Image (cartoon, rainbow, N blue to C red):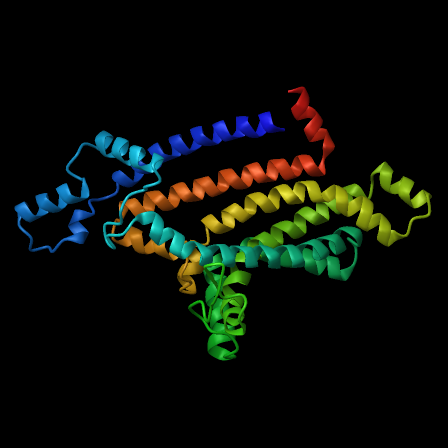
Length: 325
């Protein structure tokens, strides 16, 4: 297991290096931040001075190697717009994004597993057909449209929930959390559900397919033949076996929820990393954009590694295969 983890860490470092190169070159090719950051009336001498101060007067390969050397020391550059370390800006916004993503995944899991099980165990019932129809809508409806409809119904027409912001927060171990206050819960409900809708539909269909397949297996027939109750058959034999692909999907989807919460954060003015990225793109703040994308890649790498370790804990055959390899 340790050799496997070490091998994966080496692969992860290679992925981070390649992604840093691609991201840096991609961001470098988009416009000139000096045109946005300085006064349009500035003369050429002022423009050159700003370029030199930001390091933009150097060739792209020199800029990249300077960035890489600083990144190895934990410095991902300084924001052009805010004139503070880019990593500092991102870490300030990260708790809000992670809190929103965790809440969205909890909603998806808490609703998706039982609904998917019901649809898989009773596929011909009216409720199961309604659940599957709802999952199709969850896949089909655009996130931005659902967000706007939620605001229109629950904020504008009914006035039940606030439409923007994070609400009141409390500090826990240096982190500001909104989910621990009633005002924060009211603020997070709509963006979390909006972000969870696609994942909820995915979990429903995945759980349903796994449950229907598991109910046809020999171990389920044998468990029933032993006289076990239907509840125990489902809880011990069916659910345990379908959890393996579900854990994999949940882990990977959690990373995608963090990475692609941009639309939801923008619609609901949620002060997270996605909103910061949009603001940085508007002013071509290259260090923040590059730092954000690299942190997202790092999060995906860590989540993939954690999922693989958890997968091997759930399925001993994975450990045996890894040991033979």
